[in-house]
Image (cartoon, rainbow, N blue to C red; front, side, top):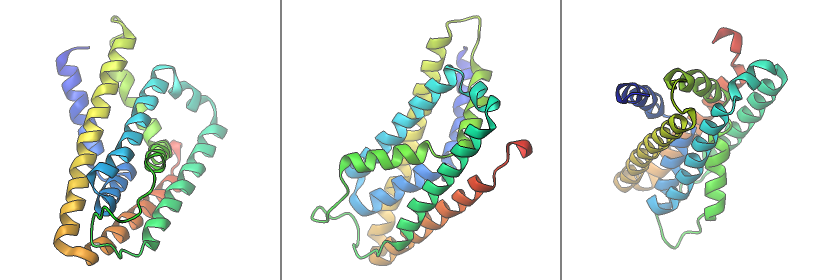
Length: 208
């Protein structure tokens, strides 16, 4: 894989990741409630999911999904249900805190990690996007494992950078708007997650 190919891949991935998705919205919400340090555990969960997905693509995930409609449908509905649940939880959040508060009881680090991990792994549209995109940038005439490793590092680095940027936006917004900012952050993030859940539930491979 040439440097120019890696650069093109990075630009394509950045365009996709920068569009607010489930893990980005969760990073924004976590940071606005608990601060950047706590939100980083959620980002680590999303990063772990990215690396796992790249590994699965390298091992032939695309062929498995193409061969099993039942598996695809099961993943689709499980993903839609999980996104809807997290979105509903955000909509129900009271927004009583005015921003990151060290005295406020925050979810355990493991809970933040796992929630983001499962959010990242719950979108079958992302699976299909990755299984279609990654192989196009792999030169079969060179060591394949090393190329997928480079692609995985690129995906992870871009995802963490974008999540951190959105997390800082969330913290800044709460600092400016205080309690109203937290409430609206919950409503926007929760509402967008519910919309994403609906789009996943209605997604059909035949129309892709």
